[in-house]
Amino acid sequence: MAALLDVHRNTVAKWIDEGCPVIQRADRDRGIEWELSLSEIVEWRMSRAVQNAVASCQGEAGQITKEEADRRRAVANAIKSEIDADEALRAVVSRQDAVTDMSTFCQVLKTGLSNMASKVAARAATMTSATEIEELARGELNRAFTAAREEIALRWFGKREADHDASRTDQPPPPG
Image (tube, rainbow, N blue to C red; front, side, top):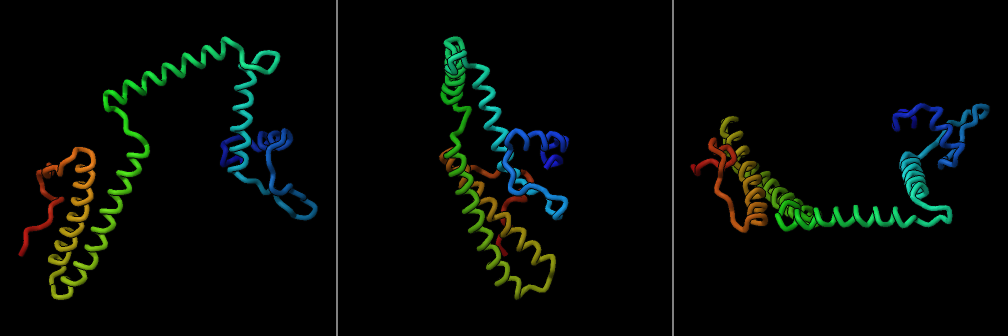
């Protein structure tokens, strides 16, 4: 655990003495090793860090001081203003929109790759040249990626974009 967290093993022992969660304690006499949960330790450390941070901002009565509340409000207002400015400049994308767009991209790509496999399998059976089969596979692969890229362009820009790849390697080969 010490190696995973990049700390000395004495540090982990100190944490355990301070209440760090343990699944199973070691017992050398019985040959039982320590069993610890990385996620539980990280959660415990984060919780302690939050408690320490809050404690440093509290007055004697355990309440946040007025100065600290004002400071936090000012920071929150500054962050909100930055976010509002970025949204007005269209410099940020909502996480949900990004997830939806990437999900759509992956779905279109998955469909294209699935279609690629069946097309290549059907047409390659009649081909004898490895180069010809490779070109067929590359063309179908590029077609799948182009369709996925065009779907993203449609979502982001409201139109399908022209191919900007001068080598045209992402375009399907001409028929024939």
